[in-house]
Structures are given as structure tokens and as C-alpha cells.
Image (cartoon, rainbow, N blue to C red):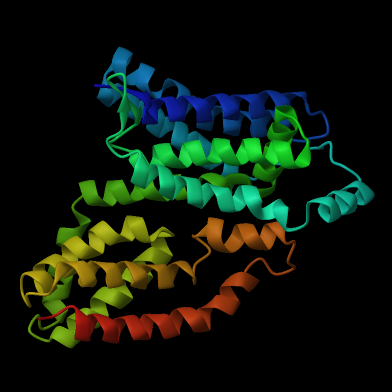
Length: 328
């Protein structure tokens, strides 16, 4: 059965929007590094637009090599400081104050609309078809629902602010340039997590733990799993990337098979432990570095410093929750 909104079409939409930003960047003579900035975003958008074409025409092996080379070039551009802010058409301070007074709390409506519509579409449109066609991609239902929610929020923003689609794209470029390379860090880290899984890093973790820890000591293994999730997340910058490695290396062989733990609370609390690591690492740039940049804080690590006491407290609580709740 065919699908109206597929994950591939969503990727194409992302690629098209990024290419529009590339064109705007090339025209921005106020950006001292507009060529390399445009190249960075062009390569990023090209993966979304032409990834399927590369696979179909060259095969998976060659396509993956080309995409891998693209990732390396993107990393080199970001790492050598070749990204820069440009010039942007913005409203005056007086206009922004007047707009905020007119909108009031309705200003937050588009942002609130995104999670509400995402959940509603995920729950209500599962398995729904019209004329033999699914409305949303059933294999990637949440992502398809998120795309619909973002479009709804965009339309709501236009109505509330009386703006235009072009203004939305221009402000998107300003925001993306403000965030810079950190905007794509979560995708990079997710790919890195896939590399670790393919390399069977979980097996190596299991062997190392077996050498230094008595597997019969349930509490110690719980501590290693929770703390390991936090530490590995700090390295990876993403709990989703750390989760398959630590769960395959510690949770499954030692706690689920060895101590007959209930998998549901075990892995849920394990993921929460990973989130504790997210609070303490600059690698989670979208959570910790981007807010500092957008708020123009003098210390870009200030957000992390404030979060560390909370993270350590929650991690300790997670250890005891896992020990007392995950075992029959």
C-alpha cells in the first residue's frame, strides 16, 4: 500500500529548504565566509536530496563512501572555523516590542502546537488510510507526524505574526547560522552510534567488565551500567547512541540474562541515566552549547555548570531505582 507522507519525501523537503538557505548565503555579501558556509550547508542538504539517487545509481557501497567523504569535508569545514554569521533583515526593536504586546502568550502557541500535533497524529493516524493510501509513513510514524506538526506550527506562526513564508526562511537562516555546526551534531553522533554497534563495541565492553567485576555482584553491575551510560553519553553526546552499546555489553548479558532483571524498567532507567550524562557534556551541543550561544552568555559552559549537581543527584537516584525496581 502506498503512502502520502513518506520519510523519503520528508528528507527531500529538508534538502530543498537547506538549498534555499544555501542560495541566500551565497547572496549575502555581508558574510565574510559565505562561500565555505554555503558549501557546508550544501553538502549537508545534498545528502538528504541525493542520497537515494546515489544508492540507486552507484550501489550502497560506493554511495556510503561518497556520503562518508562528505561527512569528513563537513567536519573539516566546521573544525577549521570556516563558518560565519552573515547579515539578516530584522525588524526594529520598537516593532518587536509592539508585536510582543499584541501577541502576548499567543507567541508560544506555534511551539506548543508541535508536540500536541505530533502526539495526536501518532496516536490517531496509525493505520489510517484513504483510498488505499496511508496518510503517514507507518514505519516512521512519529517522524512523519513531527513533520506535519512543524508545518502546522509554521502556518500558525504566519497567521499570528502576519508574516510571509520568505520571512520564515530568512529567520531560519539566521537561527541556523547562530547555532552553526552544532545544529547537525545530533545526526553525526547518531551515525557514530551506528558505527559502534556495527563494530560490536558492546562485546568489547562485556569482556572488559568481565575482567574486572564479579558478575554475581548485582549492585556493582547496576552501578557500572548506570554510570557507564552517563559516561558514554558524555563521550557520544547522545544517550540514544550510547544505549545500544552499553545495553548490549552490560544490561543484556549480566543483568537481564544473569540476574533475570525485568527488561522494561531496566532499560528505561538505563536511558534516564544516559540523560544525566547529557546534562554534563558539551558534546550535547543542542542542549548545552546552543542555549548559551542564543542567550549570549559570557561562559559557553555555564549551562553545564548549573546542571551538574542535578545530574549527579538524578544519577544516584537512578542507581537505587534500578536496583530495587528492575529485579523480581
